[in-house]
Length: 268
Image: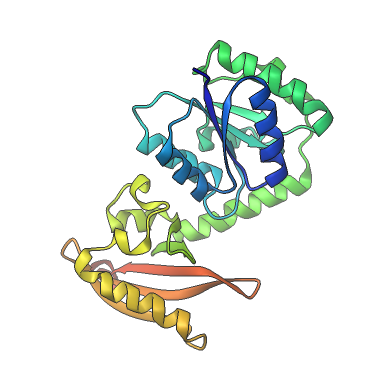
């Protein structure tokens, strides 16, 4: 029975290209064009290899890997983190948590590179330290533009995690694509239960109406910047502020801010 691979990457052409290379090696290939699609794909069939782009909008590669590690802790598969920049900053590899790291190459070199990479992985699929000769780290140059981008992303992520409030982002289909650490703590659920779930499913059933009312209110009234209300979760009062998520003027979904009222009272 052929092995299965899932490719998760927001680069449509790269997904098709890598998929064809893996099929030539006899693998059955499943494709997803963002982290949310990747999560849904794994609900239908577990795979032997997961190729995931590290830098993606919405659910990024690191959060996707955290989700997979948590939800499928008892499954055996290899996770391959991919990027044309991640290899340049090797210190990020430990944070991402993949088993291997595949550097994207120019098309004319990629076929040979993938063959060599897969021969290595298939020879020892759970070895955590990649072969130096395979990646030639010493010959790579740290591009300043890439360094600046990653440092900027890290800085913004630091702000989100240090804001002192839970943050949830849901797309227009109401499925969650981001939760910060404090949000996970307030919701008291693992990330594997949160990502790609519908926003109403992660709150108590008897508070569902308030959540829906808030979401609809800011969606229908474009002049309404935010809608705030209080719900009870695990016997704790939580203030929720709902606002519309706009990207370049287009509505993409919702942002929910969660504040533990007990914590706010203690601060006062």
